[in-house]
Length: 276
Ligand SMILES: C[S@@+](CC[C@H](N)C(=O)[O-])C[C@H]1O[C@@H](n2cnc3c(N)ncnc32)[C@H](O)[C@@H]1O
Image (cartoon, rainbow, N blue to C red):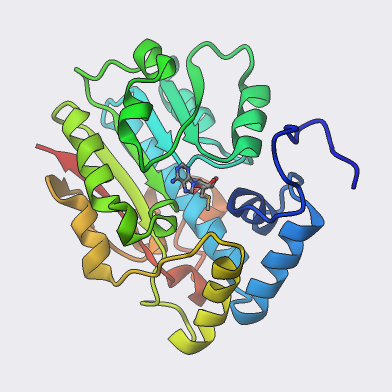
């Protein structure tokens, strides 16, 4: 198989990756046949997966604009993925020129492509690190240079925590990041769940099995377990809700708002919390 320039030598391009599968759902071009094959298998069970991902991105953009409107100028996006349309730094810097963004991912393609896209943007940094090791994120040179932890930060954990198993203590990692943030910081989060999916958990489980097969298990948590990630935060209205229900009126883009009532987009939950 020919290796394109954006694929670092270190990666095994015969093994599917979560970030490249996600890129495929979103209509991106940074994926291989193995990724497309896994995505298509998952879509046999959940044909609405691309709709869910679009709703996830639309929520993320609304939440970033909300944070900027609240006066937040620093964004730490963990599990940022392969850059695509409407990235966090574009939305943040449009709403708040000079806003600083640090992208963090453990996937080498996501990191390499982010670095390529962001070359020359001094207000944005890219870190190769793992959410399960928050200290490595917080002590990275990029966070040190771009983020002042004495001032509020918007921490984005968007569509990542459902890839962290309980055995890896996702609650501990989220708490460690929270404890490093100044009062008035925001946690922006989405998470997959069987609640809200317009088909039976058994059927949706077929898609979950695809992720298990590629050794990146997808953990569908019930709403109350997702709510626990916000311990130490006060929920911003309207709380932890299906993605299209989170402040739909704040989205100027056509697909950001309440027009998008596709039943699939009600799968999973989205919320924003604020540290006291
Ligand atoms: C579904 S994508 C979400 C991308 C982006 N946040 C969004 O919502 O559009 C999940 C991303 O999280 C990354 N990821 C998964 N587990 C991770 C971990 N433990 N540490 C860092 N990144 C992780 C994957 O590599 C992937 O790029």
